[in-house]
Amino acid sequence: MAVGTSTFSSRWVQPPGHVRDLSGGLPQGFRAAGVAAGIKPSGRPDVALLVSDPPHTTSAARFTRSATQAPPVLLSRERCRLDALRAVAVNAGNANCAVGDPGIEAAARMQAIGARLAGVDDAQCAVCSTGVIGVALDVDAVQRGLEAAAQRLADDGDEALAGAIRTTDAFEKHACMEVELPSGTVRLSAQAKGAGMIAPAFSATLLCFVQTDAALSPETADLLFGVCVKRSFDRITVDGQLSTNDTALLLCSGASGVRVESETEDELRFGEALDGLLRRLALLIVRDGEGARRVGRVVVHGGGGGMVEAAARAVADSPLVKTALYGGDPNWGRIVQAVGMALPDAAPLALDVDIEGVAVCRAGAAVAHDHVELARRVAREEVEYVVGLPGSGAETEVFFSDLGHEYVNVNAEYTT
Image (cartoon, helix red, strand yellow):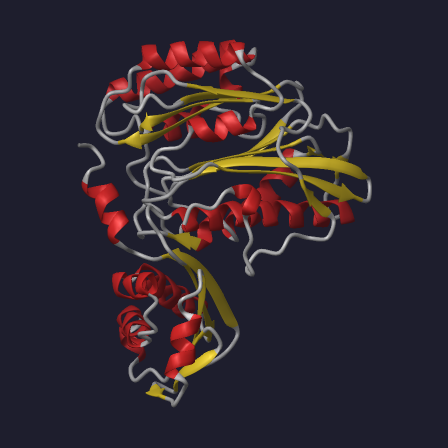
């Protein structure tokens, strides 16, 4: 499902009325570039540098929850001023993970080089890597790449940045928009990568860099970014696998002169725009899904937040549900099985199941429905499943890709 960002559309993500899509470009105060440094065997771009020039830039960050976090994540969390980042040094093709002390040394060297080239303190330069685990990173190649990128930094470098962070991605994932606030007009842009090793716990092989020329306090930036990440990257899965390198960053240059104050209409509208942007990128990652044909959305409602969350994740990560989605097969018995496996202490469970608005199960028993019409509906590119559990008061959603032949091909040959 090769879908470009410019052609993105989904019934599940509707842009707010005060947002206008732009063709590209970074917000005021930002420059970026991406180059080929020879890390990827393909020879494609694999090193990038992002810089915010204004000295009072604020930022927010979120990272993987893995117990085997890669050195770039560890270094960024421990040595960076995460509320005042002004640069990002990034490479693709190698995760710089599980290689011992050389991994920490490589990440530290990347940080120092990136900071020097960006003209910022080391603590203001985050480091990101993505790619193969367990292979030493060629830092000399990264240095050459960063030095070349520094010579090409431009305010329209967002597409080059998006291209340089790809690994198994079938297409670049980036977006740029203009946001009308009561206090003035600001811009938002973002670049992301991710297609596999993706699960609903902000645990993808996922990198996402967001830029805005709005001025936000570190506290406001962290609050809005945290809420929006929970509604976007926390809500997607391709294969249920927790990555070692996930990093999402928000940098706010303030160069527009428009300040977003806490608990104002500006904050509300900016948050709506940021939410729409991240959910769009999250859906693009699921659409990529290493050979995916279709995207599914499972909504679970009922009593007990823990129950609905467990049920939703079980459905979204079920290889049986995912292969049925790939084949356009309305086999709702697989949904019943997945929910039952996730909630073994709830027996007998009187659940309801609807697929694309067609009721197929009520109180745990099949109900009559038009099989031909249902088969037609699940052949669409987006398929929605709704599961009702006993009780009320809780609801959650997870977006997921299907599972088909290409996913196996990509991951069976990833290092060979």
